[in-house]
Length: 134
Image (tube, rainbow, N blue to C red):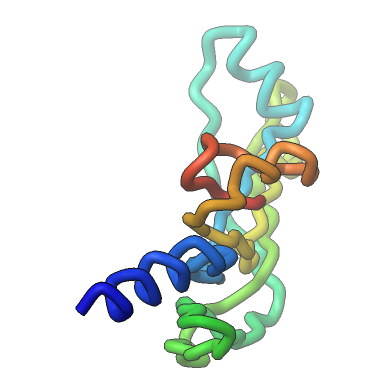
């Protein structure tokens, strides 16, 4: 009984970290100068049409890391694309108002005894036990 408990404690102390890699779509929207000018003049920007690039299907979901074996739980159901939204500018001429992109972002969520070393990596957010690498 004591040997089993000692072995379990030793195994917990020797393990690195357990976590999951998450690939999910993220949307970023950028307002153009024409959009900012309309807002600055107390006018509401009106989108008249949107031109979207050809969407590309990508694998998304999560990969769970159990010991050292990755277990993928992903499907090719996410789309990546970029789009430009047009509307009339302050002079009534059609101009781009918004640029948007819908792309897959990857983040690694992890917990373990060595996570105190996480801050030496660029993009780590968390504490000494659990965190995320962006």
